[in-house]
Length: 205
Figure 1 (cartoon, rainbow, N blue to C red):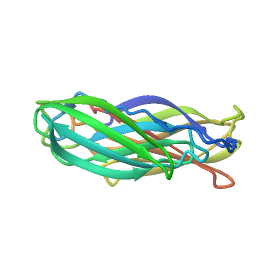
Figure 2 (figure 1 turned 135 degrees about the vertical axis):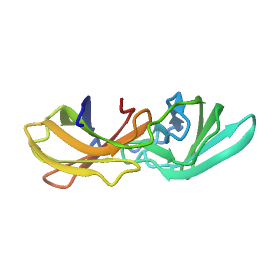
Figure 3 (figure 1 turned 135 degrees about the horizontal axis):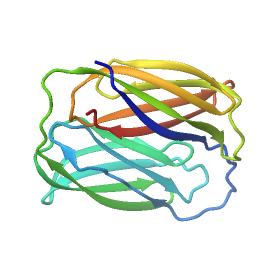
């Protein structure tokens, strides 16, 4: 059975030239949720206040003061970062701590999320995810042409769709479990190879 799940997203290329000015770092973090048991946890955010906006980022997840998971990553050139946790978390409330640093500055951020009991189907079903949106540079100029690559974390499904004029419509069909939270990963590349990414959480129903 095919069911279309429509999601709208705008992908923006961050191609700004940053002024050589030393400033303190700041970092944001968003943990999302609530998550059903067995779901992938996604933490996203942005680092700003430095010349290149590329920083080392550490994401820690704790419960009742005990560290449950940790991972390190690097922010993109636009300052954005994400961390994916696929291990199983018990039911309850969790704290997220994010540390961002470069050679001269340091910043912290915190958030919380909840894991709840959630019934998940035992047999996967074919679902089609359709994403419609636009892709523009930071100046607001539409991307003349490029490709949209889509994949779903935890599955082998992927798709590649060409677009032009800044607008796109791309679809991906995958066998997923109802009630389980998934991360849709969208990558866009223009004709010259400049890239942008987006991550969307969704629950098939």
